[in-house]
Amino acid sequence: MFGFHEENVPGRCVWVNGPIIVGAGPSGLAVSACLREQGVPFVVIEREDCIASLWQKRTYNRLKLHLPKKFCQLPNLPFPEEYPEYPNKKQFITYLENYASKFDIKPQFNECVQSAKYDEKCSIWRVKTISTMGSIRTETEYMCQMLVVATGENAEGVVPNIEGLQEFSGEVIHAKDYKSGEKYTGKKVLVVGCGNSGMELSLDLSNHNAKPSMVVRSSVHVLPREIFGKSTFDLAVMMMKWLPLWLVDNILLILTWLILGNTQKYGIKRPSLGPLQLKNKHGKTPVLDIGAFERIRSGDIKVVPGIKRFHRNSVEFINGDFQELDSVVLATGYCSNVPYWLQGSQLFDQNGFPKGQMSNGLYAAGFTRRGLAGVSADAIKIAQDIGSVWKQELNQIKKEVSYS
Image (cartoon, rainbow, N blue to C red; front, side):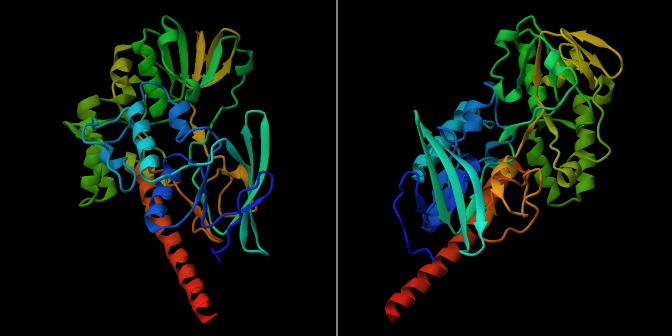
């Protein structure tokens, strides 16, 4: 099954021993490292020119990990002891680069998957890619018996269809293209979205003396990142070992009320389901506040309702209010791109998330809505499964050789 190998000929077919891993972000790196530990060969395909391109190219400068580092490390390599509790963007990228180096992970960069389809007759995956090196464009078809989808939940930025947005004369960017509030000093900026990104970008704009307004269209849980000096997430994990989810939620909300007060008073309505239940049931992550809420309380960040439509120099809200604007930042989230290239598979839904148990040697890494902690758990499980199949096949080959 795995005993045959053919050298990569540009524009030709390539047989891959072991699995193909699509994506060289944290998920792809973690699966690769775990496979390396199992002694299983693999090929990593990455459309960009670097590992963790989302972190390197599409995140704002002030970004830090939202959870303590112990929940964010990848398998078999802890963060350096000298790293702070919440590593920043640069530190996390350095950690990932060291991770790739330690486990000798060398992705094939600038190679974009056009399609991946399971060939029922031959029981193999056919993965077609286009690579661009300068002006040279190369088409390749890879064949393998196992495919790991590791492109993640956040492969593409979501741009909502808002009436009049194209008529707006000011700058409109997605959060993935936002780096710093430095160039927005003194400007009226509308941040569309109130998740972790929307809150942090609003805080960054406020820090740079811009005039941010943040659209809060629906209810959202805002929790302090730390409660009495301890990570809120860490506290929740500890309590969940002994208490039911609903009770942990109630305790967290009471503690949050003591620290932040009544968020509804400032235009941020809480959902009826508790933060952990909401995350469990609908995958909606609570906002971990690192200072934005204090700016909302002081009026430095203005909370505004849903948008009715944009005009040339202003925005109209659903309550009838108007506001003049210079710029718009769409902190409207990200989505999976799997439906664009994974063909003929009923194993992913239209939003690009796995429906359940994979088959035909297909695996999904990093789609659990559990962040980096979920990435590590996925990687370990996938590598163990592939490793066991790999070892069975090797034993079978050895038996056939010994009998011949």
